[in-house]
Image 1: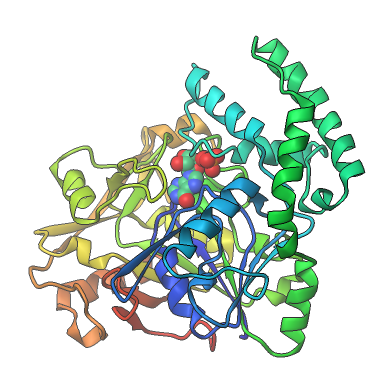
Image 2: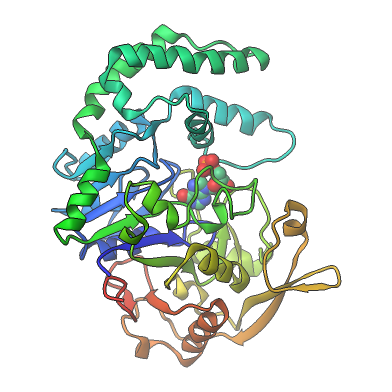
Length: 430
Ligand code: IMP
């Protein structure tokens, strides 16, 4: 298969950045297709750490075209800020290596403000968003009042759109007892940022089509993960986009067959940031050990992540619904030195046994994990570059995970360094 889509198979932060970067070497084009700068992708190259939020990971490799597709919500100020930030690390971002879809929707300061306001005042469900304005921006997109990248090129349309958008937002703000947004000021801010964005604007679907026709390899880079999917995740504790690989087609403007092999990324254990159900969460020494050894702190927000055992039920569901062909299992080394390791193989809900994760919020919060316990390993797996180097117990663990989730482990990552990766199947060839 010429193309590969990389998607998270848990709650995000599975180490997609490293795997995408690893696969990038063999790709010509890297495409983001959903989410925004709520994503935090950490890349470690020759000991240098790059933290990307909105830019596709391909920008760190020379000669690759990076595309921000139409399914992404773009905060123009965040994009310019990120371009300036990575420039200080020596990465030059120009229209030669980055294009932004003309039909992508914008995140505005009023979206960020609304996101933060809801997080601070919501007395019921606390989502624990990244406060980047992602949800409110997607709401305006489906509400058909969003300002899109192409609108920045037309002052008349921009003015009309700002007026229409504020008719909605100022009514909402009045109802909440908040100050109204000044249309003239927003318009001026958009006009000021437009010249920094417009050089990157393109019809990304056409670039992707041309790349496909000339036999180039495309890597579709997912953000967030399956359990944060707006339809299939732990709703309402989710992000506001579809995170499954099917979105790679609609979010970039290519047909379904253009997506190719779907590689799901899963950690050898489970983490989650923000609120919501998490059946295998460990609020004890074992969980704190995973947090410390795995350095489980948010790339963007610095929040400590909740940690727990590997949940095979959830990953199996991600594989089935998300059409995942193979898994990249990351951070196996974080389990090194544990006396025993556990895998969740099913749930109990009262007196009922379940082999799937229910849809209802209350049920999701009530399920109790059923575990299988495997012996741990004392030997270090950190930095292993072949399967043969792994201790027998670690191999057994990986094989058992494969059996339980119903998909092969195609890649195994044993440290943040890109070279510390064991390739079991080549996603670009499979
Ligand atoms: P939002 O995407 O900022 O609206 O946040 C919604 C939920 O998705 C919250 O639980 C966030 O913590 C989570 N989330 C968003 N982006 C990421 C990510 O890149 N990694 C992990 N969790 C994320």
